[in-house]
Image (cartoon, rainbow, N blue to C red; front, side, top):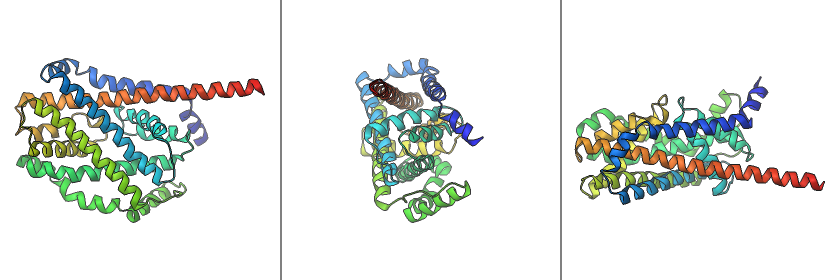
Length: 320
């Protein structure tokens, strides 16, 4: 039964269906709000929109580098191009309901690069944990600078930060991963996490959150918020806080709605209600578009690679 399931998961038709379904879900996330998006675009200079999108692409790319640092530390060295094909396509699965499709996709696609499935899933879990801890650190700025209502509702993020930091320590994290693998009766990981590997992933993740905050700050500045150090810190911390809270709601695709509500509360003291709605909506759409563009490029690159491999094998067979 397990062999049959693995065979189905590795079938080319299922992979194509995953890519098409995930792309459709990401497109729908934008198209379903297109009227509001058009209204938002008229409120902000085109140059700011373009720059925000570019920063959003950089944010997603640097997030991939954080994940790649964990993958390398666990024993799988892949090029940035290979990592991009694997990460950007699999991450489209987060737009599908259920919260597990990106895990399944990264495990099956990683197998093509001879990455054990248990390692692929462990790497993604660790990279998410690293992102959560770095987000929690930056979220402290939003809790300190934001309205009291924000602290009342989401102050627990700061209180639980020490616990997450302890869990992220390699000696603790390695034991937790080993215990989890024993529970599911899978072999232990070949290479444990190191302080250097986790540190590199954390540094990339911190840079990624800074880029996400810059993207948000560009938008709120264009809509009338003062371009100050305080508004910058609030934008960076606010986005990190919104992502952390939204991540916990795994039944909602990519935290739709939850993160927007948190950001609206964070920005309420700096922008009018209408401007907050525009900012939250446009930030969400631009980051979804960044995921979509990188996913399409990575999928096309993966297809070209597959065709090149098939052509090479056909040429070898004809010569033989």
